Length: 349
Image 1 (cartoon, rainbow, N blue to C red):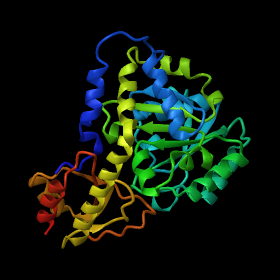
Image 2 (image 1 turned 60 degrees about the vertical axis):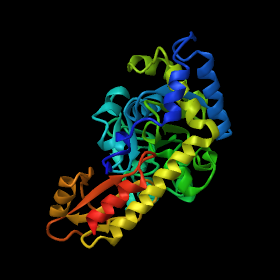
Image 3 (image 1 turned 180 degrees about the vertical axis):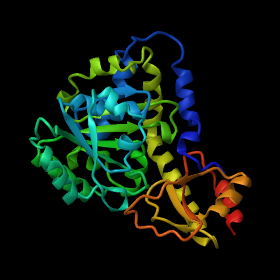
Image 4 (image 1 turned 90 degrees about the vertical axis):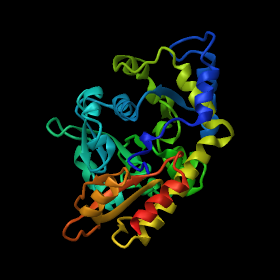
């Protein structure tokens, strides 16, 4: 009953096999090898667009270098108050992007409100010496509470970005989970909606250590060779990241893994709804389940072997807690089995 994070899951066997298959022999280092180029071409096929792809080890590196690539002196980025890029990167965006600031833009259901975004950007565009100036907007797909921006919602935000001539970045740590929920093509959730830069996550969905920063306007990546090297994120044997992505994309494995994780989350949500002491905080849209329960119930479930975490309640989240209640987060993954959820459901009942 491991629902603490999809980061707790290991690597899918096909991805592990790909690492083994490419472990021997020789190939050009530092991202210039044949396998690297094959995977870069595969990204272009998947997104049906020319792309500039940069392999990185972590989502933190992707998000931080995305801002660094488009930063300007006095730069201010805009993101939801609970966005990972604002709250959970340990200061990496500010450090790696040379002092960028990330301003909060609230909105319901974990998503930026377009009208509030417009009003928040306006004082920073063109900006002043004292305030600084806008550099870009970042949205998280799926959001920090597991909700998903619809194509229309992305259109509304990208339209504001175009008005102020700002790039739009998407933090896609759970990109595949959002994609299969929407049932659209990768292009229809990214560049066709006005997304310029994508942090493409693979680690949470079955890879060992594989993330990529994808630029749909390659000219925006002009400083990435230096930025990646300076930040210490240039792999010498990058073929081992490429090998993971090669297996990840083969026969749409990445989408199948995300569908499984999402289906397990739906099953888990049903168990939460059926529990006598639990209820859903928000409707489940990807592979994260947020539940409300008494703190004593959380203690009982963890003592029984379930692994999941309390989640901080924030203003405007639309959830009312009774005395002694808390919000918790449970995350499913490609490795979650129905038996895990059925055991948890028995505990709830």
